Amino acid sequence: MNVREFCPADLVEVFALVERTFTERYYPQSLMDLHRSWPEGFMVIEDEGRILGMIAGIMINHLQARVMLLGVRQGYQGRGLGSLLMEHFEALCHQEGMMMVSLEVRATSTRVIDFYWRIGYQVMDVIPCYYQNGDGAYVMKRMLQLNI
Ligand SMILES: CC(C)(COP(=O)(O)OP(=O)(O)OC[C@H]1O[C@@H](n2cnc3c(N)ncnc32)[C@H](O)[C@@H]1OP(=O)(O)O)[C@@H](O)C(=O)NCCC(=O)NCCS
Image 1 (spheres, rainbow, N blue to C red):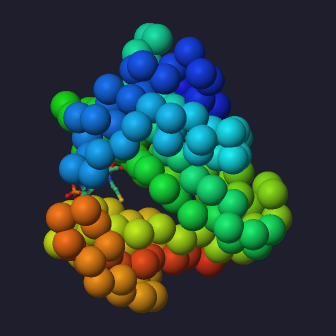
Image 2: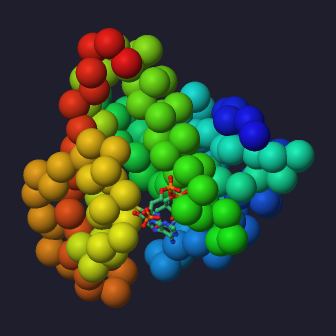
């Protein structure tokens, strides 16, 4: 199992994963735009050459990053891969001198909210009608420890 930076050759596989994992619709170009905005902040986890999960974030400013997409291939969820991707992403943010990571999560996705809660994220805000189907979002944030 290896976490590494996304590269353009991964696009087809990562786009297929995104299509199958998320309710929202994305375009391959949106993934490339995310990669261009912060290449190191777009990571994949692979096993024997197969991509099992991905995370992509943006730098909001020099102190704060936001997770835009986190997805683990169906059939591999619940095995710690999502937590591992978050750990790598947070380590990168810490290395860049950032203090906080934020993200939005569908307000109806109790299990995903639990996942983020367990790894230290707290609900700080609510955004009504955030998703394409009208669902609201919780904004969750975590302060990074100075010693991680
Ligand atoms: C949410 C997600 C990234 C978590 O990654 P993961 O590798 O499954 O999570 P981990 O194995 O590190 O942690 C397991 C915990 O995640 C939570 N979880 C959320 N959705 C889950 C799912 N579909 N399957 C298993 N666990 C899930 C649970 O709290 C679980 O703990 P539990 O087994 O005690 O219930 C992953 O399940 C996923 O890709 N879900 C679909 C896409 C999505 O909703 N992404 C988040 C967008 S903000």
